[in-house]
Length: 180
Image (cartoon, rainbow, N blue to C red; front, top):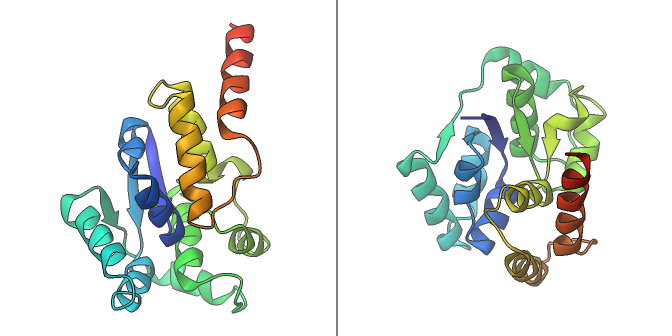
């Protein structure tokens, strides 16, 4: 495995919508989450049973491992003022990622910005789905047409990517080739 990736609920759901969770494994990420993320899925089980089943299958298959929180994690979480901008699930993922030195993946911009005011982490350790998709493109796991379809699907689920994903990925590939 390349590295550990701590993932929150919104990122899991976005990967569900585009049916691309396998990309994390293809990119050699070992994926963990927290009990708070599980609780969020359980609370929404009645309203969104398919999302709960999807999450449960990822846990049961070992694609995602629940990483235990320790006392220090809970203390660090309690030092961040409660806010509607960040859930306990999002916060717990940041705290675990900081402790184990992993990356954290969240697509919740407000939560990411709020939590980073209180929890100091290297900038490159906080990633979004966009970065994973571009990384997958650069490693030839996705093509231009797939990126376009993914961007449309995510937009249909209210996750708007403000850049042209296929163009940005192609631009980065050209930059990499020019540097070699």
